[in-house]
Image 1 (tube, rainbow, N blue to C red):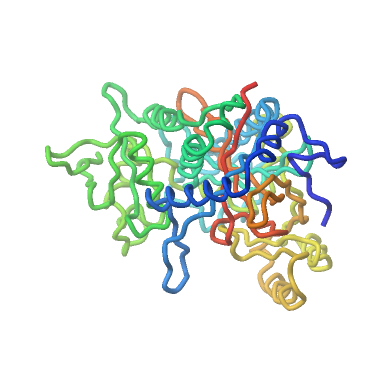
Image 2: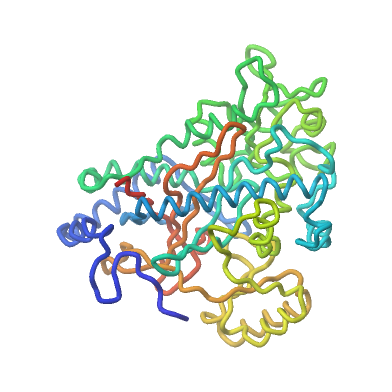
Length: 471
């Protein structure tokens, strides 16, 4: 694997300008002080209940996501490049989804293969020809970004359904402000605390009807969902109701919430459950989580669902590989943020290459997430590689492959002090009917294990605060 780009230090050992103040501070603070503050941060996380569960584990217990106290620093100019590319990408995603469910010009032009859409399990024929409020589908996007050198950021993945992690972005900043005020006083860091206001303004702008103050609710599967903390956190931040399916009902194609003062109309639902469970009259009949008749109200244009139903047709890893062409097709522009080079194993010549180079590649399931169902060739033994080879031969359309990128590293607090660890970044892009909003930064995920490239919390990854310098 090629040598990783160190975001703090240059090859000659000198410290990059953005990190100079942080490096001096780290050198001046005794290790026992840092250890004490790390324990204090863990105590705070436990006290306020920032935990998650891993599905599929027997006797699964709530876990803390490891929090790293050393912030990641991004310069103002770097962020300007990123934010322009993110806005371009989400605009193209919205145009693509709208087209797929209406005119399908992208399929007629041969830019994206038809079977990639029609055979996609996330494709929702119920949305064919259905207009959504303001022609926007992806209102909240989480675009995963990786870096390989001083000038190159790649998009690793598009999350267009129910991207999670924003609560960690906000809580990480709160804890850093509480534990390290002196470090903040040495830097001019762009704030992220207006995300709640931005999200609420975005959601209200998406209401299907004017004439009254839109009522917004967050729909959660309930307390046993792995991201329930985030659902309750956001409801509190926004000052809106957190509801379960049983709290809502539909009458005359309008959604109402049951309250102690009688029914209250709901105009916008930020839903944190999958399409399948939204409405037992339209999708899974055994769903106890959704709202009977919700899709009738949605099709009647009386409620906005955020994100729209059927957005998953745009965010699997096979469609991802076509995103540069999708951007060119709809916008007539070159992508500002490149994709990671990707082999589509559904194509015979790509499959042949992948099978011949398995030990060098990362292979992922098209619909996989959370770091599951993937092979990191350089970190795998012969038996693991041969097992994956059999999976590829049996079902090539279910996989894509990519080169093993040397993800950039950031200084990270580990047991033996500060050491480099690989990171990625998930910025959150909000698309309203009025404008696009992006808070500066996002959630930096860090592979806490030495040498690991897997940053997912379910695989032992942690998070850290992301500082965009405002000067």
